[in-house]
Image (cartoon, rainbow, N blue to C red; front, side, top):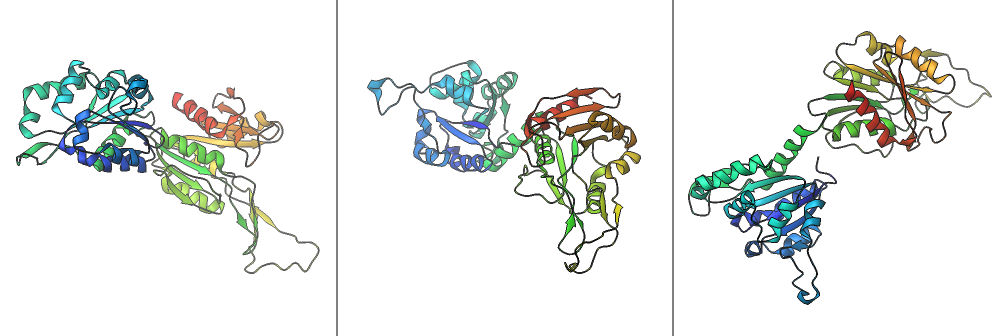
Length: 399
């Protein structure tokens, strides 16, 4: 959820600033790039050097570079504010929150806040009486009206010895809050996607098999894109190599077509969208040798029988799922794809043609045509499989 995001962490002058090194470490562990901006007095509670080392970036607290005051080097608050994908102010003291609510701008952190165009989260940290004071509660309300998001303080022992609300949320709770909040705002939040990917292998004997050259890259790109957009994703994968998945994705490893069908059926009824991207082998040996077949003869005859057609089977039992199939054709591509759409009771079919340059098993690019139930077809230009995955999901969202 936070991987690759630019997070600007604002640290104000509260005792809870001692928690910010742990917070930076957690954000980095999630894959975020973190930059830290402090109020000048916050340096009394946590060392900028510590935050710089942990964030792997300079820490800012003045408008100009204090090491070279005569050179007029400017710490650009506009650039900092616009660099951020989200701005987290933690701890957020009553003083800073009041200034934010009223547009005051007497330090670099506040200037960056007023320049930010991203979501702003703030984690209040103050003593009980300050937290409950009407002026502070008014700051909370006004910042909420601005669209800023409060990470509620926790109930606990405070620096004064009082017990109650005002304790800054623990770093792990702050990170969890942000991730959950972002998830609810993503376009596929609440949707459940089931994706198949890769080849299937049908054994001939213990060391040989019938298979194909599918790499699984297209299916993995679809699964990752859906997960990044907030969907709950399950991928049923044939044998693949060196392909990475978003950590939230549940993966079911399979080898044969029968195993893949079983993996799909364990999640089919609960899925909203099912995308069958795997290249399932069409045939399997009628009999599988129990031992390695010796190469004593010049020729070998195998009797083959068809494997189960997963797409057709799912089409026959389809409920409310949106069922999307793939077709790989080498001739009369559009005609054959439309025929598969009808015979298998699919809602959409995505056509790949090996006749197009840059399209092949194992390639990083793809060129597709999407065909709907009315046989309207929509052609897309050659592009990376990640962008193709985005096109497919965008099309599905419009239905």
